[in-house]
Length: 225
Image (cartoon, rainbow, N blue to C red; front, top):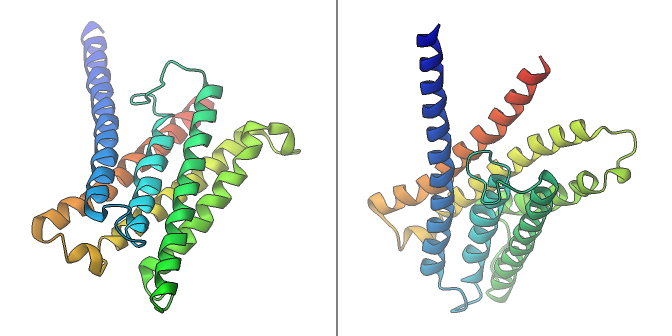
């Protein structure tokens, strides 16, 4: 019996360490990747330069940090109440939407000024869809803060739907970033293994966030069972 307890404690420590390391790695990736794209795009040097900078800031930094706020192992405000975390999460999501809309406006204006067609690539089409979805996702979260607005809906059900739709939104954002790395602008400057390292950033972050959200949902299911 004592041996089993020791093994369980050891497994719990290993599990906890792995989860903390994963959360720290995700923080590190989203910050480094955002800084790298900022250095690459040099925002302010041209109208186009604002597009990759703002979109990366929106979907790699703000959205990732907004989800990590609820991480039991890597939240920067772990000791705060759930209500405070929810408010900070919503603020970060609003910043994400603001950057995404401005990034979309920058590329739209740039193409208009240069008489180029709009939304002709998968990156452009998916990017437009992602911006629309993330804006709707943030608006749909208002009843979670002001539950009186959602009459007939339980808070638990709203949180479940919000988590599921939020994960889909995050994956759309990650895919948009990956497609952006395939653009002529990026591939002209970043080649060989540097490109693969860059592509790993949104891919690994997406896997980490997906694991966090699904693990939290499964934990709640086990508690109810």
